[in-house]
Length: 299
Length: 319
Image 1 (cartoon, helix red, strand yellow):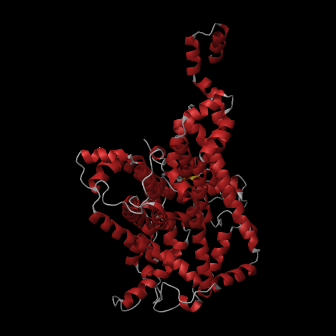
Image 2 (cartoon, helix red, strand yellow; image 1 turned 45 degrees about the horizontal axis):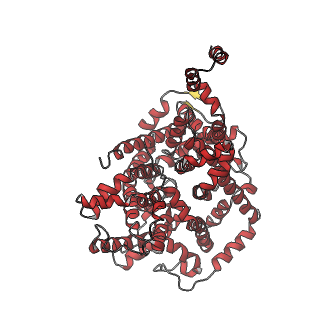
Image 3 (tube, chains in turn brown, purple; image 1 turned 90 degrees about the vertical axis):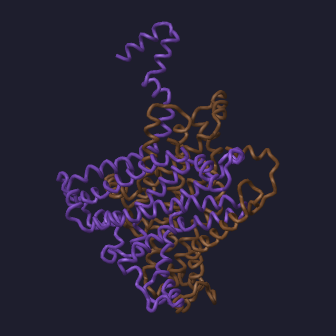
C-alpha cells in the first residue's frame, strides 16, 4: 500500500488541480479534460437535479409546457401529500419502515459477519479446498442474480421460509461480491499481526474477532453499504405475501402507481428512494474507496 | 488402512520423515484446519443453497417440463429446440440483449476508465464530489424512472419540449412507443446507470499506481499522458481492469428493470424485450419452470462465456 509510505514524507500543499509542472501534463491537455469533465458531469447530473427539483415543484409546475428543469416556487407540499397518503394506508406506515429496517439491517449485519468469517480463513489460512471454494465465489460474480432467481424461489418454498423475513435475508447474506472484497482486503493485513497473537495463545476465533475485524473496518463498512444498495430497492413482492411483512419500498411503489393525480407524491417518493443510498455513500466514501483499492483480480 | 498406518507411526518414535508424511496427508491437513472449516461453514452453506444449487437445478430443470404442481417430466432438448426454432420473442429478446451488451458493455467500461482517469487528476473535495456525481446514478435505486419524464411521449416530456423549443421537432415524438427509438434510448439510460462498482474500483486502482514508475517512464521517453496511460497506468492496474470488466459485462447482460419501467412490458413489438424480461415472464408469471430454466441456463452460459473471453483478452494488456 503505497499510500502509507507517503505519510512519512512531508505532504505537499493540497491542490484541487495538478498544475502543468507535473510530469507529462500540458496545460492544453488539462483544459481539454476539464471541459470534457464539465460536459459529461452535467449530462450525468441533470436527471438527478430533476429528481431534486421535481419533488419541490407544486403540481401546476409539474405539468407545465414547456417543461422547466428548475423549480420556480419551491414547496414542501409533495412531502406533506405523501405523509397524508401514508397515514391512509391499510397497514400503518411505521410497520413498513420497521420491515425495511429488519430486512436491510438483518441482511447487512448477517452478510458482514458471515462473509468476514469466511473471508478470514480464505485470505490467511492454508487448507485443502480453499482455492476451489474461492474460485466458485469469483465465478458467481460473473452472472447476475436473475439466473438463479427461479430455482431460488423453489428452494425458499421447500425450506418453508416463504413469506418470512428470512426469504430475503438469507440469500442476501451469501452474495459473492462481499466475500470477494473482504478476502482481498484481508490479504493485505501483515501475517505478523496474527502470528504474534498466536504466540500469545489466542485461538483463531479470538484472532478473528479481536485482531482481524478491527483492522478491516473500511471493508465491513463497504460491505454494509453495498449490501444496503442491493436490498434497498427490493420490494420483496416475490417472497412476501402478507401486507404486514412488506418493506417500505413496496408501499412507496404502490403510491407511485396511483397515476397522474399522485405525481407530486411520486416525485417525493423518487427523491427519498434516491437520497437515502446516496447519503450513505457520501458518508462512507473514503472507506469504500480504500476497500476498492484491493478489489483487483489476479489470475 | 490409513488408521493402521497412523497407529504404526504413533507406536514408533516419530522420526522427521514420519512427521512429514503425516502432516502431508489430506485427512491430517483437514483436521488441523478444523477452525477454518467452521469459519467458512455458515457462508458456504448459504452460498450452496442460494447460488450453487440453483445453478445446478436450473441446468437440470431445463431438460424437463415443470410447472411446480406436478412432478417434473423429462423432455430432453425440447425446451432448447423450442427456444431457438419456435419462440420468435426469445430470438428478438436474445438479439436485443446482445445488442445492448455489445454496446453498453464496452462503452460503459471505457466510460468508467475514462472518467476515473480524469477524476484522478483532481484532488481533495473536488475529487470526492466528482466521484459522487458519476457514481450516484448507479445507486439511486429505481430513481431512473425520472427518465420517464424526460422521454415522456407528450409535449410535457423534457426531451420533446426541448427539441420543440429548438425547432427540431414539430410535434411530440412518442419515444418509448416507437420501435426504432426503444433500444437506443435504453442504451442511453443504461449508460447513465452503469458507472458502478467497476468505476469505484478504477478510481481506487489509479491511486495505488506507484508514482516512481511515472518518473522512470519519463526517463525512458514517455512523452505525454496518453503514452503514460498505455505504458504505465493500465499495466499496473490490470487486476482492477479485470474486476471492472466482470462488473460491467455481468451488468450489461442483465438489463431488464430499465426496460420494464421505461418501455413497458410487453414493449412495443417486443422492441425492449431482453433475455431477462423473457425469463421473468416464464419464471414468475407463467410458472413454466422448465422453460424458464432453459432461458436461465442460456443466460448463464452467455455471461460466463463472455466474462471468460474478456478475461483472456485483458490478460494481454500491456504485454
